[in-house]
Image (tube, rainbow, N blue to C red; front, top):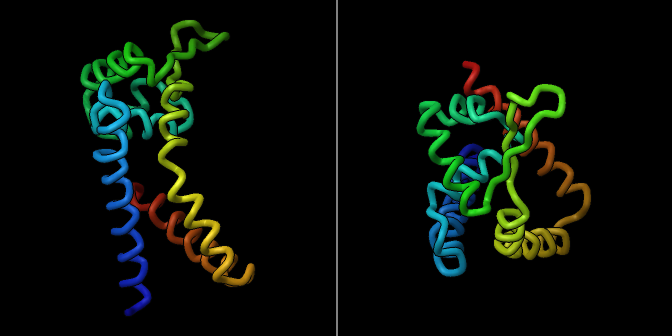
Amino acid sequence: MSKTAAIGGLYSKIRLFCYRYLYHGFGRRHRDITASEVLSADVIRLMGSPTVSEFASFVGISQPNATYKIKNLVKKGYLKKLRSPSDRRVCRLAASEKFEQMRKENEKPLLRMETELSSQFTREEIETAERVLDAAFRIMGEEKKA
């Protein structure tokens, strides 16, 4: 397998894991949230408390569509709105404890993988893999700028 095929394979496996997590894990335990809502809430969490317009711009949807999604997630208890103390007009979004708890339930396979990898590889090998992945993440972050 070529080096790029290995990275492409890793990317595909991660995506499949995430999709299974969305449809299988949440579908069973959390019937009140859709896969699209999970994605929206997770994007907001990963963005680090964006505004509605920052979220809409990032995912490429209209402001009214973003507002609708966020309103539903707040109503269901998966997101919370945080008013800026300095400017009450500014509202930031954050994942709620309910969403964080749900997300932690689904991280168990990742923790198991981390434990197994640390027992199979030396610290130096893991550090090398981390440097490669960090470079890949940096390149992925630059993708939108290009």
